[in-house]
Image (tube, rainbow, N blue to C red; front, side, top):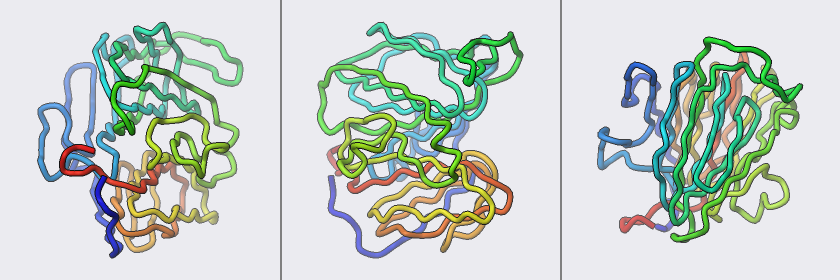
Amino acid sequence: MSTTPHDTVLDVRRADARDKTRIGWLDSKHSFSFGHHYDPANTHHGVLMVNNDDIVAPGTGFDTHPHQDMEIVTWVLEGSLVHQDSTGNSGVLYPGLAQRMSAGTGILHSEKNDSWRFDGAAGIHADRHDNPVHFIQMWVLPDESGITPGYEQLEIDHELLAGGLVPVASGMKAYADHSAIRIRNKYAAMHVARVQPGQPVSLPDAPYLHVFVARGEAALEGAGPLAEGDAVRISGGGGQMLTTATGAEVIVWEMHATLGQAGR
């Protein structure tokens, strides 16, 4: 991990500038280098290496594939996504449910749009649908390699109703008793806010922040208006105010270190 910067810099990345992967069943937009979309100047911010904005058609999805030494957090915006992995974990992900998979020494998993509408309140599959699933998947490196693979999920929809930042996934001591799920990186925490008009949200004070407008429109102090899919990479300190006139769902990564040139 490198030392932290001293001057605050806000780097706005517009939605349309993202690299895209579009095939028959998948519409994926990449905030950072991913797959064959490689730019050595765009591999990470802080410890965040992947921020993929994915839309998967009904009855399709990612077949079984491997991961290793990565903390993977998935946040569903619309629809439902079925997870299955080689350690025996399975689950249906839907809006308001946090999920983390620790790849560790190696794991195989699949992610599919199950073509059913999931009623989270009732906890049942209600009826078949023909709707895509829309989700954001984010990757950070763990503190150490070779950990035992793991999985965790928890519904936090009720906590999000207040409109403020909710710690969703964290490895930081500051959120040990507050985050919904844990990640194996003591320098990072992911927050989500369903920002409401007239209820501004203050960003955490951290040397590295990644602010992503997942739904709706917002405005960030020092960066101006942000549309859906826009992101701001902040280096050198937080505390900026986030507002909206119409409502927005925003994902904020708070990070207290960045990747070194050797990868850690």
